[in-house]
Image 1 (tube, rainbow over the protein chains, first blue to last red):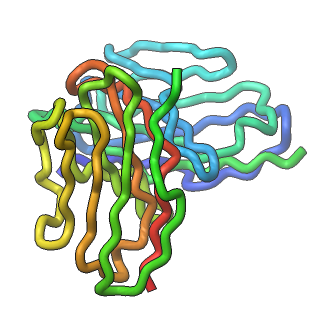
Image 2 (image 1 turned 30 degrees about the vertical axis):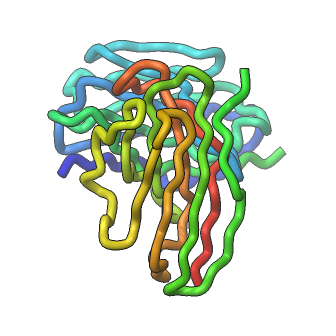
Image 3 (image 1 turned 90 degrees about the vertical axis):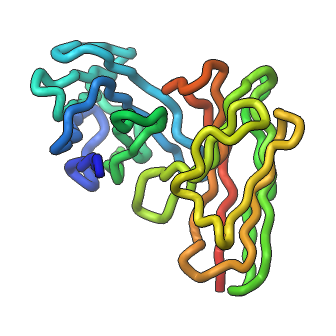
Length: 111
Length: 114
């Protein structure tokens, strides 16, 4: 079935650093979504991408829809402590109206 | 606007016992989803309702899991009997538009089966 692989699985950075993470699949996706999950909470949608090559920003977050439609990237600039959490990519399964999620990238920030 | 409410937040049971989780979606949201999130993994859809009808339950282990949304508003997810591998966070989400990717998640119920 369609699976999403995220890397890295975890990141330990200093406050103020930029962050890059990605999500890849062996299948084509027509939509890419990025969610963030804080401890003890449910995921929150950060950015949605609908077109190959699309680059979309949400504050310090920027996400790109890969031109092959098999990958997506999320960048966070000038990280701050509240960026700590788990970042998930997700996409709709072809032929079904439901989402598949990656396994997440856990971000830890040292002040 | 109130978010998605779930209860209880935590539950510890022994294997073979039964457990039920409750979810109240955002007011007016017709679509409701139940996800299972095992530690270290992303959420996996168990069942999706549109109003009080089931849209997709292909990944729901129907021999032990059941869910209902009788009046098209709040929903209950039940496990009977529970197994050790059911230990996970159970997330409820809702969306205003059918099959929307913009889903609003509740805080989840953390289930531990011993």
